[in-house]
Every structure is written in C-alpha cells, then in structure tokens.
Length: 366
Image 1 (cartoon, rainbow, N blue to C red):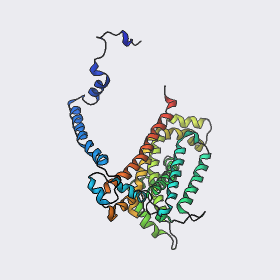
Image 2: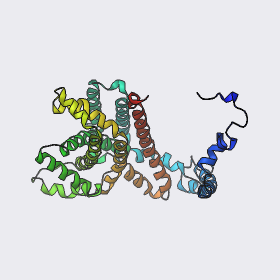
Image 3: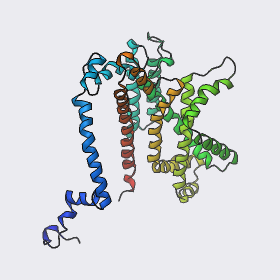
Image 4: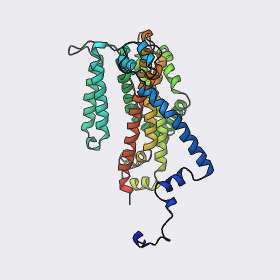
C-alpha cells in the first residue's frame, strides 16, 4: 500500500527539482547539454520573431484603407486588401449578385458533414439527409430552376468548389478503397491481380499526372461528339488517386486482425460479406483511423492542385485577387488568409479523429 504523503518526513519526499514546473523543465527541456542548447536557441528565435510578427500582423496593420497606397504607408499587414477581395477569394468568378447561393451551399455541406460526425445521426436516415443536401447544393450552384439564374460550373470557384471536390472525393474514394483492399486480399486470382495492378499503378504516379491525364489525354479516347466536363474529370482523378491510398491503409488494418476473428466468424456460419460488415471491417477501420484521417486531410489540401488544369479553386481565386493592378503586392496577406481557412478545416478533422479514437477505445479501457 502506498504511503500517505502527509506521513512522509522531509527525508522521504522527492527533491523539489524533480517535481512541479521546475521538474518538468529540467526533465523535458534541460535534461542534457544538447537539449539545453536547443531550448535556448528556440527561445531566442521566438523572442526575436514573435514580437516583430505580432507588430506586422496587428499593431501596424491597416484594416480600413481604401487604396493600396494608404495600406502600404502603414508598414504592416494590409488586411483592408482581404476586406476588399474576400468575396473574390471565397467564391471566385461566380456572379457577384448571386454569391449568396454558394455561401448557403457551403454552409449546407459543412452542416451535413458535422451531422455525419455525430454518433446520434449514425442511422439509415443519414443517407436521406445527404441526398437531400446534395440536391439542394446542386440546385443552388447550378440554378436554372425555381427562378435561379443558371451558372455553369466553369464559373464555380473558391471555397465552395474546394469543399465539393474534397467532400465527393472522400465520399466516393472511401468505399472504392474498401473494395480494393478486400480485392487485394481476395482468394480469387483475377480479382487480386486487378486490385494489385490498380493500387500499385496509381500509387506510383503523382496526383498532378492524373489530373493532366484526365484533362488532356482522356478526351482523346472518348467517342467523337462525346465529352466529359472538366470539373467531373478532375473529380474522378481525385477519387481514383485517393482510393488507392485508402486501400493500402485498410489492408494494413485487415492484416492486424487476428486469425481467430476470421475463424470465429466462420464457426457461426456467417457469409463472407457478413463477416466483413459485422466483425472484420469495424475492427480494422478502428485500427487505421489515424492514417485514414491523414489521407483525408491530404486530400482536402491536394484539391488545390486542380489549379494546374484551369479550375478556379481557393488557391487560384487568391492568385487572381493578387493580380489586380490596384492591389498588387499583397500576396502574403492573401495566402495567409487561405492558409487560415485550410488550417481551420484540417485542424477540425484532426481533432475529430482524436475524439473518435477516444470514444471507440472505451471498450478496451480497464
């Protein structure tokens, strides 16, 4: 039985230098001469950079300038540029008077994603919610009905387009990746060979090459008079690319499941798909939550690569805002603005994955 700290005499107590804040500093930051040197260097860099950065970002920043010359005279960040160009950055070249539509569409997409992350919504009705939400988003973005002006998708851009590409990319790549992972572990030689060839081929090339292929090469193989929209081609390339990485991640989770789980499922007479759905896949997916989330975060950021095929995503919208002759020279502010947007979404995904890991691990806690 552990001794009561109140009954310990001064000779039995641990030294103060090993407990509390002093102990933490000593063991974490100054445990060795090398750690102490690195700590001092990092502290010096922070002391030199943070005050200057804070001064540029806030103290000397201009929030209300009406011209570029006024902003430049302040000597700090020109957040008036963001106030002037935020609609172009967020919505691209979507018609100015109709930009309330992509705003509502983005809110709907984010709301449905948040609902999907809550366990109380994990029921069959969630699929109906998604269908209704996607129909509403399509009506808002395209228009042409209910008195809404028609807007072709070559005028979509900014944050709504980034959300659409990433949401559909994850939604379709995940089940496709599951099938590929199961196919690679299949006992049927043809299915296994096709899955292996596909996974290794796609993982062996960068996403940029797939986007170029979908934009330049794919139309050459289509029948004359038949074409696929450029945005749809880019979406397909993103789905195919992400599915290969998801497949390998899920395959690792399947290999981590003990053989006894498969034998137990066979012993109670479950079919292959019943085994996968009820026993194997739930355990495998729980194991690979961190790498899966990393893939989702990377996919959300990789949607910025569609700029190379002329799609007006968030990055291209910021680049266009910077190219305005009246506000030229404020690329730092523009890219900081979209960096904050990317950070908010990626950090939220990361925090949710940690929460999900904690919730699913409760059954194993002692």
